[in-house]
Image (cartoon, rainbow over all chains, first blue to last red; front, side, top):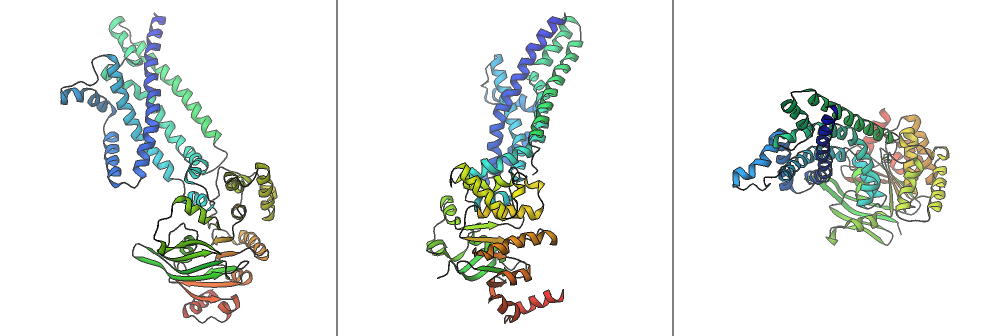
Length: 219
Length: 251
């Protein structure tokens, strides 16, 4: 029995991991783009981004999942996601990437704006180009600043992956819960916590290590 | 002929005119001190010369090189700005060292990126410059491991590493306690003796008097008084300058 459960949970966990890393892969660059837009000069774009971030951060991710998956079909009578599990997964990924990109964009903006203006000016009077200033001076200071909040957000993401079940993407908690119906046992559901704990333990170690790596200077 | 020539420099922020037509000229090897009340435009003048602020009007030249001329009307590109800033070095009030680099790396960064020699040549030169400001034993320390005075001396070395024709200082000792002020002023004095062309915005009057060949008193966006230190400090003619000195002496 134990082996059957573990095999099922493993399978679900692989799905959870997919949601996890694909979200990071999409949300980090998109978040950077959004943060640059929010700091840019175009007033209209800034306004649009403000509203977008407000809506995304102001509503539950679960609601966003449902709206993004069911919305197109209900509003336009055209389910762009198709009926298969691939379609549900794609919809889930779009909701997650958009959601996390908005949170990340605020962290990036804070990190970039937190670098004193004098750093850039010092680079300018030393005759450095804009890209040299960004890559040689600003970037590492930004990274150091954003590691703690990013660590928080990424650990939250691990747990948020459990939400994709609302549109029937079979992640680990879905797999655990299935044993209640099929075998009348609940411990597999509880056992999913071990997976989350171990994985978040690893991430905590990784972020601790990164913080330590950048401990040699102060910002 | 003078090395630095600033003519009728004006700068407004919105409706507030901070500089109302500044004229300054400086010969090679001279040290100009700029004194005056806070908010009078001293720092803005310095930032305009370095094109950290773009002047509203006026003309700035260094030797035969045009730095800024409002009648050109064109907006300077980033590349042009960099090219024109090359003539100047600037030392900031709060140092602005790069925290992730050691003293030596701070000094060597710009020469390295601008390929001013092989890495070994650049390193040797930068070590030499840091020795000149008395920091031979601090090469591999990070800024947070240095005192304010040491940080400011690294900043001076960093500016010197690009061999600017004119070195600007924006209140270089204002962020330092009196004890640390001395070590920074000593370095600037030494540079003056070596005939480095410098423009120093400062509140250290006795220092300005000792080290400068020329003093400008800027108040309300104009040069209200200028001349040799003796003239400006001992025989001022401008009322604002007389009042300013009066307040200083009353302290």
